[in-house]
Length: 266
Image 1 (cartoon, rainbow, N blue to C red):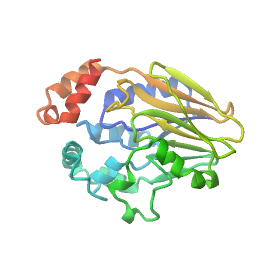
Image 2: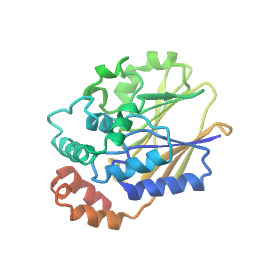
Image 3: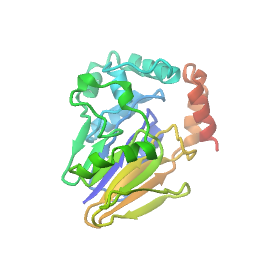
């Protein structure tokens, strides 16, 4: 079976449509969303409806949790707070959509893999204990710090998003961890899974902001028969998105969106 993972759409319908078309081309059997359907860009209602209408199993991302009012953001993240407030305002009179945000799970576990928005090793037992500190970012030091728990973890594969950069960590039987480089200039990058190793894949972002500087929609395809994972990148209509964002009365004034626009034009 071929499992297709994507997330961090962030209200970008152009990138989401391209990502879904790519899933069809790759003949994916099952689709999963790794969270953050909404947030950052102003079309979160459209992207949320698209994912819900397709019945795609979806993880709660930090942006869903912020908009749903589960916790508040770090006061220093002014740009993200502004984007969250906008999306919350749009969805305020869409009670059916807000209730969907409340129902998204924090984790989805299948037979040999687990899905989470960011990091399965920091999630609290209760949703009520969640806060924005559970959604930091992954680096080599953090991965090394969780090696003992990762070795005991029941699932061979972890698929997550959040960091907006495609990443791959391999935990070998001897307890050593390697961060394998993922090239910047790929359309498809294939990884064959080694017997005895565990893997943690970060999918990168579908809709951006693109923290690796590559403005393309990202996804992952896991073939459990072939025992391989493919990093996928596909292009989308950036010009129309650029023009709509550049002329948007609210978002054109958010600094992070200005950086995003420059990235789109690279």
